[in-house]
Image 1: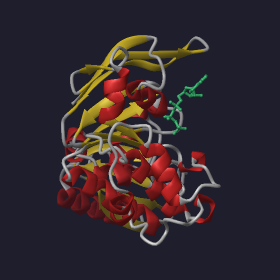
Image 2: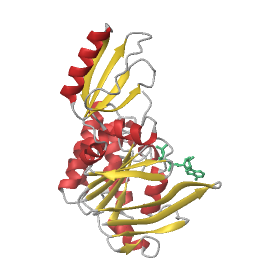
Image 3: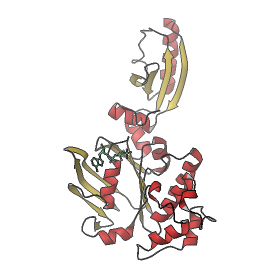
Image 4: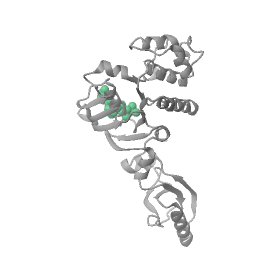
Length: 304
Ligand SMILES: Nc1ncnc2c1ncn2[C@@H]1O[C@H](COP(=O)(O)OP(=O)(O)OP(=O)(O)O)[C@@H](O)[C@H]1O
């Protein structure tokens, strides 16, 4: 549905998007996951036709992104940052305004119902809550019934409840047969929503697969964390199953990535016993996309 070939964008002599290529299949939710400044927005806006690439090519549903812009415009829907909505228009007015930019338009009532904004038709945009504004921004993006929808960090700044309601909307758009392309710096969002994820860092796509596939590529399925006694020199790297050992960001906990959780735990406890080392805060968890990102880049995806 979307084919991106060798996209490059240079700002001030720096390649902020550096030969990015991938394909998005029809009907999937495809995510660009990366930290702030990775180049997600620049990549998306070049695909949407809002920024001119310095190199490379984009086709959407077989249409050339730079030469067939008006046909592309009818095929895609782009969510604007909800802060860019006109505060002094009502919900209905803004939907009608955006609808007027296209050849076809979905009925206002249907959009209000679909995005849980019934009863808000006459409300001024500035009186909507954050979650309602964000839903309105997506309603506007699909006002012309596009087959492909672009959402740039759709849940940034939303509380957990509003975020979940947005997630439901994204999955419904996919269930309606649309292709959804979204960017996010929340790994949980990418894991929950995306059929496939491209991880971006410093302008490059460094990994691309399904969330489960990315975690599998790490060749690790569990993480063991604990706080060893101060000044303990006992080694844990050679325990059965351990693929990698590192210290947590704050330097207080040991983090073991393992593909055999039971063997690692047995070995850890007997070694600690033998050496008379106390372990506190012992916990285990399944590896996440955060671990994939950390392993590939040596950095954390999000602070905090
Ligand atoms: N118009 C511009 N002029 C100069 N530099 C730019 C411009 N737009 C983006 N950049 C730079 O390009 C890099 C990538 O920015 P981009 O907004 O694409 O990242 P992002 O992954 O979307 O991050 P964020 O989550 O913060 O939006 C950043 O270093 C940014 O400062």
